[in-house]
Amino acid sequence: MRSVLMRSLTRPVGVRSFASSAIRASAIKSTPINASPVGQVDANAVNKFTAKNITKPAAITGLSPTLKKFTLEGKVAVITGGARGLGHSMTEAFCESGAKGVAILDVLPEQGMETVKVLTEKYGIPATFYKVDVRNDEMVRAAVDEVARDHGHIDVLLCAAGIADSNIPAEKYDMTMFRRLIDINLSGTFVTAQAVANNMISKGHGGSLIFVASMSGHIVNFPQQQCCYNASKAGVSQLMKSLAAEWADKGIRVNAISPGYMDTELNRVPALEAQKKIWIERTPLKKLGAVDDLNGLAVYLASDASSFMTGSDVIIDGGYCTW
Image 1 (cartoon, rainbow, N blue to C red):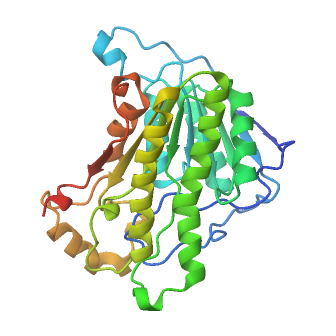
Image 2 (cartoon, rainbow, N blue to C red; image 1 turned 90 degrees about the vertical axis):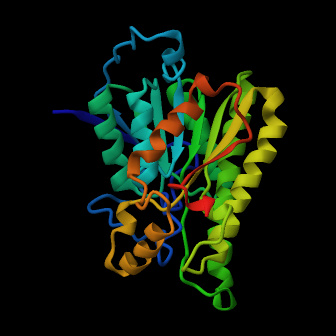
């Protein structure tokens, strides 16, 4: 019977909701921030959850010098939006690749707690969940400080949190919805990156920051109308390049992953079936991306194998942007 520790933060983090975990551009409407059921869990009481079934993972041995660079041994990764979807899949890939520990920042307490319990049980590493709203800069900074205290240091940040509004004509776009999406997708990415970068700078070491952007920052999607989402992801890509240039002399690398249409649970709804046929037809590989198709790139960008790579936005879209 695994035991768990659940305790409140002494700092003002986790008392509000956090932007929902990664939702691809294909979602018809944005997911309400408090839409996810939490069962018997008091969402305001769950500030931090630490799984307690930790065993020292076996060292990765027998690898060539080249393959050794692709491991994450000794590294602690922070993931926003890691409770479900693409963020969850990439978090598990980090664990598979030898990460020393992972910290998930998300709005979904039930999914977040279950995720860290499963990861700790499966991989034997420290995994913690922090209920955080990326729109609240004080909350984000407090959570990052707490992660650094709990895990000792931070080496990797993966910003996978975001929402999407889709099938909304620009002339009818509600400005409250527009500002909310920008605040979560773009401002939330910056706030989290700033907090982690400041921690790295204060400790005198660099690290790797990875933003989940989108092919929607490079092209205009068809047939759905989603001007705000497209603009937000273009902003994430340009923000990445700007921070890569500014923080290079501090040893902090910043790169982005731009997915195409992905076969996530959020896209497996009847209302999207007609649009998915169009997406697949316009994709040279004639399929949607699998949930784990981003994992290899995420691990590469987090690892020392990409130590000379910064300022790059890598598109993984089945060839969609080539047409």
